[in-house]
Length: 179
Image 1 (spheres, rainbow, N blue to C red):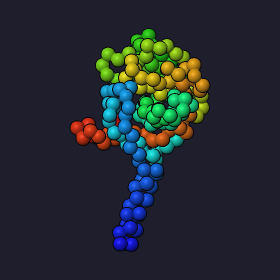
Image 2 (image 1 turned 180 degrees about the vertical axis):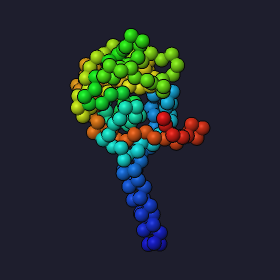
Image 3 (image 1 turned 135 degrees about the horizontal axis):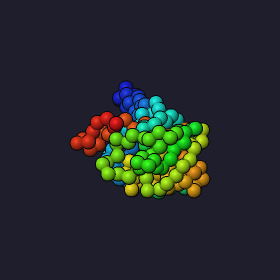
Image 4 (image 1 turned 90 degrees about the vertical axis):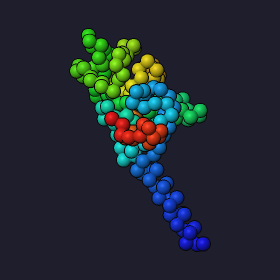
């Protein structure tokens, strides 16, 4: 009986350790990341990338005080794509309609065909230690563009990144790596 209790406790501690240090599941709440992620998908965030952001990464971040006024109502964690990081100038849009990073057009193969990169025009420099994030479903996403006038200017501190999304685990028909 004692051995069984010790084994159960060890398994619970191992599961908690994996969730805290290795990977953590999240459910996608909306269509803002379609077609990459769909509402209801269960994703895994790689906790080894906590506090880091690179171009093109799909990240889970704590939006409290930046995207969500409080943690109430389940709006604490957000899933978006990193478009620009500290020190970069992000502009919408070029003459051909593309987003630009430091004057270079951004290739966005993850957008659905015919998707406009942004209906909101902007031209700004991302402060050091921050990131500019957008949903892949630009017509249905609350993201950095929508928060330009809010505290932080819609740019989230990179240290708020909980992890990089690397897999869809549910539903099984969509399970696999996130590109």
